Length: 245
Image (tube, rainbow, N blue to C red; front, top):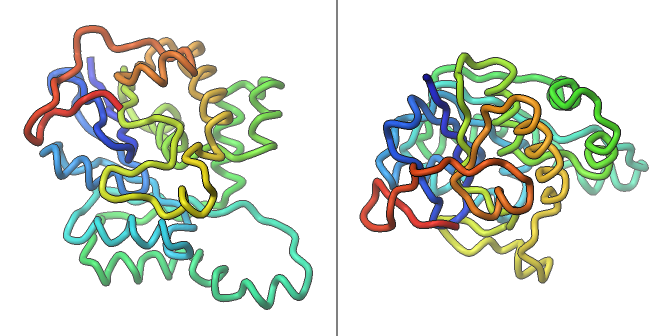
């Protein structure tokens, strides 16, 4: 049975035993955790367009210096209607959220990829809704807030990758990062991710539907109902293992 480890960027991920998966997929800067724990080069990584445009995102990009992924998926921001004044004042941010700018920043830190995939936000939105069978409760939550990059990585795996099992590690529904204090926590005075409720709804639905989605994180099991991968967690210690988030 072939398995894909979908790795989030939260501190101290509970990693499954290495014989329980064959490849890994990353979200945003979770490639840092993959390298720190001596995991294989990600077969694909999903990065949000917002990374170069915000302080916390630029922090994330810096820790990827010298790393690589086989395929990089650019995850664009949803289209929003803005009045003329907001369009002018946000022009720099909008430019920084374009694919060319992310590629430029990654090149400056020496991050490498074999293939760059650029698709519309509508493509990913439709893919996730289709995977969730347009379930009304899930769709309602998606309309409030889009899923996170990590959940998008899971969706890509289910929709496009040839694996029999998917394992979620390094997810906690919080803004905490494995590599530094996320400045967004102080700015918002909260460590709860705005994507949390949507991620919980989507993860839970996909796990129930496919029956091959598991997690090593107790929080994901308790809040989203994703089954725990029994007997596969490594213990905390030197890189190559980690404790529960």
